[in-house]
Image (cartoon, rainbow, N blue to C red; front, top):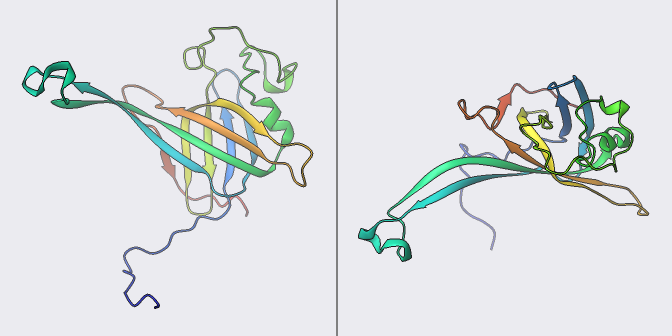
Amino acid sequence: MPFAGTIPHDFPHFATGPTLVRCRNTIWETYELDLGYSEDRIQIHERPFWHEVKSDAYGGMEGPPCDISYLGSIAIVTCLLNRFNETNLRLISTLNVNKQTLPSERVSPGIMPNTGLYMRQDRCMCELWLINKTYSLKYQRAFLRNGRQFSVGTRHQSFALVFECHVSDPCEKVLVFYEEKDDPCS
């Protein structure tokens, strides 16, 4: 039997089309890298952190919390790219975060950084832009948490990038900026 209900006009279907993934760094040297276009949407998972507050009135440490305290959030952005700039993708490897050189001067994306390098404090994070025909999202502090994942020896090559994004400033608490549309295909 076909659907006989009505679809409310206040909730239309929403489509954004192709999304351009851009990485921009202005921390130690300014560079902007267009990484590529999404293959099958970009998944964004906002992950809040919580602390459970215990109380004797609720059974102490073994009982349920009497309250839950919010501690902040991060965003996990998963990008699967099938149209990409391979040179730019090589430059953003997490195994290549030497902050003294420009990306074009780095020796190899396989050279490991010093053990114990702080991504945020040593300023190895970049701006991540997700640009489509409807709007742009900008995460000011992002880095490749899971490295790069790519295929070789297949009919078409693809790259999977998983970024972890943090607030830009702990006092302002802004995780993502929504900006005016900027159609990446025009």
